[in-house]
Length: 504
Image: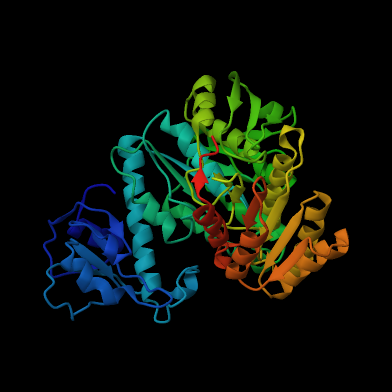
């Protein structure tokens, strides 16, 4: 965050400073977890599912916070010295406070609105005074992997701030934006949505100059109702960009028709990426190695270069093209971009994280999240790895629920079950007893006339017991489900019980 005093912060958020000196500077980070507060920081009293951040104001002040941003003054803070900035109430009906499940009294929405205002003020000043470039990324899948690749590319040209993992909602988005300071050259942000208008609101907090739209899939279909509504919402990003004369650049996936037509929704310069020759940036001669790491010839209007990715999955080619387009939009040359892509590793946990146990079991931990498109991509990678080296290794798909698919959930899970059989996956373990999981299991059994090849268990612990008993050296195990399932415990169990060696 830029250097600000408590008085300046109170003015920005329209709040009332209590118990502090307006000239006191905030010298630490902005945090909503009191355990992460450092001396001179700013604490956000946000409500959570189990606790209210106002209960921890005293702890944060005792830890040295310069102030706490609160919706109501906290008077019971024995032994604590510090200030509070009391923010005014807001109309919760006018906000999309989707992450504030416990916000019954509107306090969370008030603090959240103040957080957004503070982030906007900081970003605006960094853009005006220091030339900060803000990059926004959205899409139904691939946002985090692409964010990591963009971060790696731009790191070759300057200092980058990007969110850890998928910090991409109305809390994580401004929190990340406030990580940028006077030394930051590039701010790379994911923009997620659960309802129309969400992306527009996030873009107002940290207005992007460059916007990347990856795809329009079926993630959150249950909340949006149709892919057309999803497309309309994702397109809010390109609508938020400045026009071409002011440096606005929209990077669009030409292989997705719903994305490509977004060119008509922006006055920014449009740069297309894709597999066809009509795309401005494309990958030619794509090939993958035994661990599904892609190599290709990067073809751009500014030149060509060879790229050898270290991240896993052929679907990463499209993500890399988007990252290359961002690099070009920031003035980088093609050879530097290609070199940066070649050194990039997955910076976010549990996303196509490929490791090998001491006895030769390959574990693909892609368990952070799941939707039909990302599950198909992961299964394709599993199938390619099985055929590497001219052999055919035994493959395992340990799958849980793909959440938030609405009325299409049962059908989509059934299709995934049939799809993995067609890819010749050897063994399936479905985790969870709900209707979607039953549909996945039955789809595979019916498509493959399977018996012992498929198992249906209730918990991750039961899945661990199956792999302990049946997985053999040389097998490849894919673990994938939506984050709420917590299925990464199976992948971590395999690595912990069998030991780990590097896959390089």
